[in-house]
Amino acid sequence: MTSNNAKTYQNYINGSFEAARELIDVRNPANGEILSRVPESSPEDVESALQAARRAQKDWARRPAVERAAYLHRLAEKIRQEAKLLAHTITAEQGKTSALAETEVNFTADYLDYMAEWARRIEGEIIESDRRKESIFLYRKPLGVIAGILPWNFPFFLIARKMAPALVTGNTIVIKPSEETPNNCFEFARLLDQTGLPPGVFNVVSGGGVSTGSALTESSLVDMISFTGSVATGSSIMRNAANNITKVNLELGGKAPAIVLNDADIDLAVNSIRASRIINTGQVCNCAERVYVQRQVAEEFSAKIAQAMSTTTYGDPLAQPDVEMGPLINQKGLDKVAQMVQTAIQDGADLLTGGQVADLGAGFHYQPTVLANCRSDMSIMRDEIFGPVLPIQIIDDLDEAISLANESDYGLTSSIYTQSLEKAMHACRELDFGETYINRENFEAMQGFHAGTRKSGIGGADGKHGLYEYTRTQVAYIQT
Image (tube, rainbow, N blue to C red; front, side, top):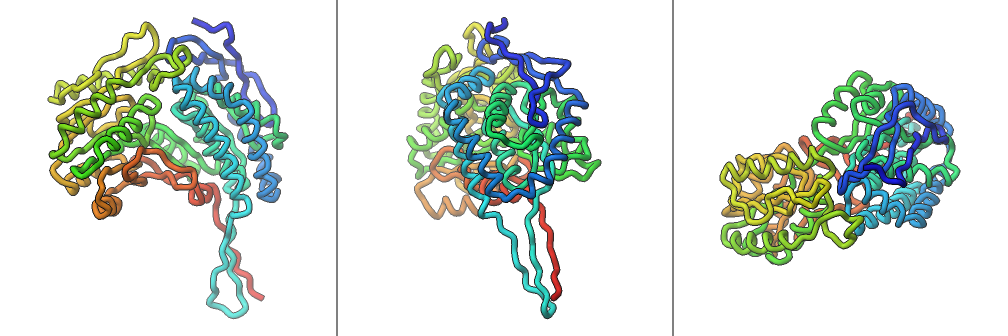
């Protein structure tokens, strides 16, 4: 089925929109409708974008940082002016609820302003010398050309998360959106084109990972690859980057544990964990993926979370703007979730609610699901689900919960629910994760530092530390 309003988008290279020889379809995951056709970029298209970024970079870096930041402020204002259209675009191609899509758009504008404000705060260092009459200066300089490779789950925000710190520190960038959700990126480029940004500073090439993505990550013109996505793709990118010793910045997923102790506010825990599980239909790398609940409150918590999940409304967000969940992104994602749930039940987990593909006539919908009496050896407790499924395991004390939580390939986010400050601080010290949330849902702040350990990635994003990921240092020894 093709929409009468289906658009054909063009790559954005060197300040111009350029047609591609081959096109791919973009579909609405809630109903299967073809929304647009976008370029399947060739290696030559990618080379053209990278060459444009390379040519533009030196002059861009010579501009004062505050001048570079002014373009981000202009773009933020244009995004706010078209927030409704942008949110609709995201909902149509990704299945995100209307409310969450609007939040993503507005947060993106705020993020651009936030990163722009770092223009006057980028700092070097003066280092004490061992010699008389010598000064040692440490400068922070741009890396050069950045390749930004985006996921489909927060496709609009991730453009800004990569391009804003890159541009304000003097880099240029080539963005590749996910082939599942490229439309919003082209709308982003349309608005950015109206800011007067110099040609070549920001470029967009769409296409698949094997073709377009490989052309980006194998290129010697790239100085850093910033990627958000799966472990498998991240590993492939690292292999491609190795040939040129290209720096990588990778966020690769998570299996976030939520620990509920017997002194927790159970209603708070239920509401927060539910919010962290159903957001974006569970397709968020930092949302709660497994629960460890202390035995004394396990029955109460399990009953309440099952009831809360069972009342979650879901469907096509464009047809039903008030639903709390939309579809999964594609058939592959739906099949994965369904298989993981069935395997868990076969292995002895108890199904408390959900557990089925939702028959809504079209789209990739899965029922909000809770599984009790899970064990640490089950795949559902170890592997990333990326769907609206919450597995629960009973534990006897905090140390057991921490031990089980840390036995994971992932180390992005974690959370704990307790009214004991001592236990909360003990968890912060012992949990081996990049982020720990205490008595609240899993959602990071732009001024923090979003980074993980183990297979959750290398490097991080946001705040001062995320900004400096896009810089290198140069030390000058000055003898006078």
